[in-house]
Length: 186
Image (cartoon, rainbow, N blue to C red):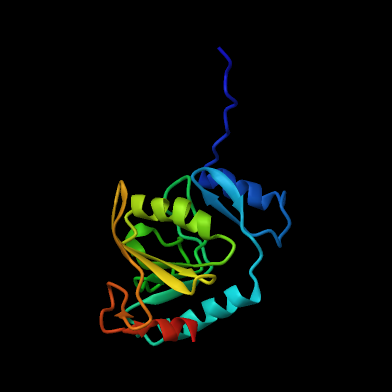
């Protein structure tokens, strides 16, 4: 019987050790997903602008209620440290300087997707649900749609919907913060 090749799975400690060796250039954007180093694609102007627009909207949430992290790591477990586009976090006095946020610190993760839509829907969505991230949004730049996922469980998110242009929506943790599709897409 033929043996299949075995992948070497690295953990977060190995990941940071590799980073310190400067094996990859400083410009290389990477994230650790389920024990594999994944190269992130370059950020285009449409993607960056949408992140900035959402940041400005989320900045209306009082700082004492939530911190906003932009393209910073979230430590899910010893084998996964993704770098989402935006995260609404529980406030902490150290601003997460002592350690990266963990799942219990997260209110909402937002991924802005243009070239990464398949990966965000099929890999990150399952990963975030498995780690009990309460809410996950995919902002699909091509379809001009927002996919909202809630109620995480081991089998994935139990609730999902895509707001229409006439509907309003809010992050679960901030129901008073009402948005429209026009707010996000202009």
